[in-house]
Image 1 (cartoon, rainbow, N blue to C red):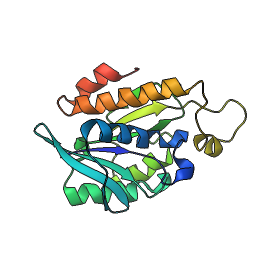
Image 2 (spheres, one colour):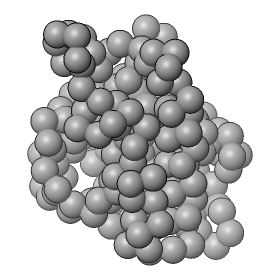
Image 3 (cartoon, one colour):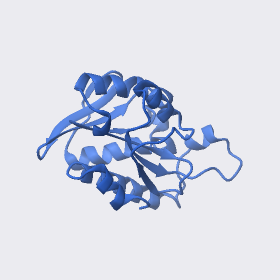
Image 4 (spheres, one colour):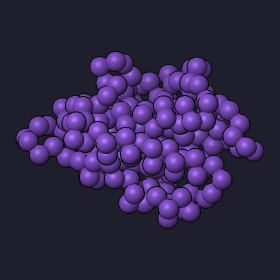
Length: 187
């Protein structure tokens, strides 16, 4: 089984925030692949379906960002998902809004959701799709910034990034993650 996880925070007040871009990619994939997120386990919402010969799970942890690992690792254990059979999608302050960077391993880079996942998983080696949200330039504190909404000027880049991220995840269903990285890095 391949598992695609989008990080974010549950609740209406967080829906359109920068920190929830991972949830947006999962929503896009759920629509494209016709995988409704109607099941829940270990404080996460998920859906499972077969896409071609591949069994695919889409997951949104509902633990709040900083505790993402508390949902993801028990789901992986329960469904017997290997580290290399997972992609985690999340926001990145160090990338320009809408830019993608795919990696097979790395540190948390200050991202508390990834820090939680690394702590619970016991490794930094898992596939990721990082989506740029940029850094605040107006003196806003980072916690306030990641919980703010994208500007009207940024919306087109964000929509494009969500679609490209979903494309990369779909490509991974039939290609190696290394091949997908070569296609989508820097998109």
